[in-house]
Image 1 (cartoon, rainbow, N blue to C red):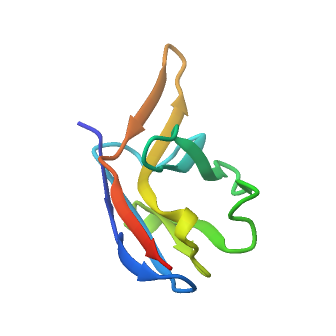
Image 2 (cartoon, one colour; image 1 turned 180 degrees about the horizontal axis):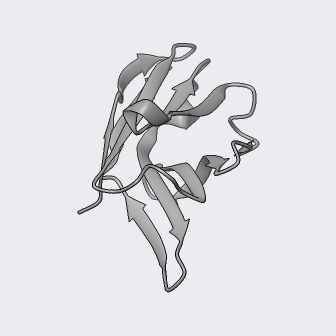
Length: 119
């Protein structure tokens, strides 16, 4: 059974930093895309950062230059380093991994971790 467990969220003052972790278990740590999404209260879930299987990365305009997505294959973990945090970064952050199979695609989500940035 594939499981994604996020950790590292919390309360931080504006300008501070947090590092989120997403531990993936129950499957080979090899995906076409590994993503971090976030959802603020009363807003739609939005894609924050993505790292593709080849290692290339992409970010939402609102976090470029502040957030960095990375992986540690030895630890089966995806990270999101968040610096210079702003109150508008507040939300629940979700880890997501996607893999295209020969028969069907796979798409897995974590349970989310709360990030709150105070002004």
